Length: 269
Image (cartoon, rainbow, N blue to C red; front, top):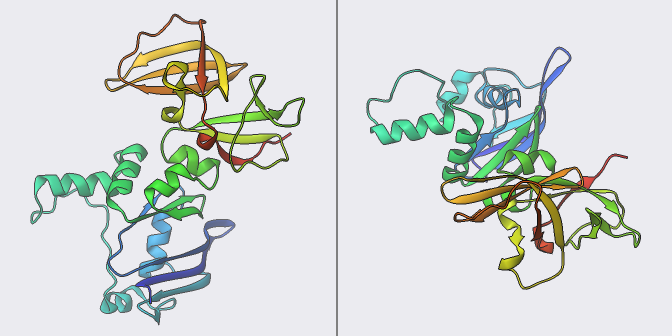
């Protein structure tokens, strides 16, 4: 039996659907992080769970008890509690613990919140516009995003539009791009993480070699980030260490491994 179960929970404010068909469970001892941009519905979700707002549809169970229509104080008696955003430190916690709490639950910025949440949580709920886009562990969200929103929200992702080549296969910058788990019906939208792209000098495979012109290069302390122009599309490449970056507009060939190409749907025509 899960500790908490939300089943098809919906909340509307007039014509605005703040939380739409929310369904997930949390097991005993599990830490679940809720991430998403401003307006995603995170606070409304918490208010629904602890009884500040009544749900318009769906059910909420706590340790097998249906608390959907319980007021907040009755839920508290069952052991449901929540914290609010307060501008005060916790006197019983260390400085480091206070910083960790602030980083995960505060408003310091979406990147800090997501990074801290991914590090500390067992599973992560990614929300957007009142909808749960994906639930999973950090590695699953990063390596197998359910859609473009998750792909771009969790880490840096190159989003590329692929056309069908003369042979009907996906093509990028005039070159056939071999990919795993991609449908045969294009055009396509795919994602590639910058750190998964290889310089030609670092690979022994000639498949998926793509040539673009350098637009920008910068050393960021531990990685060199290079931005390529591929017939109007941007491709960001990240390589460990400091590299001597060729001048702007100089051609550079890289390899995109087939298993690094993540399908994100069909492109709009």
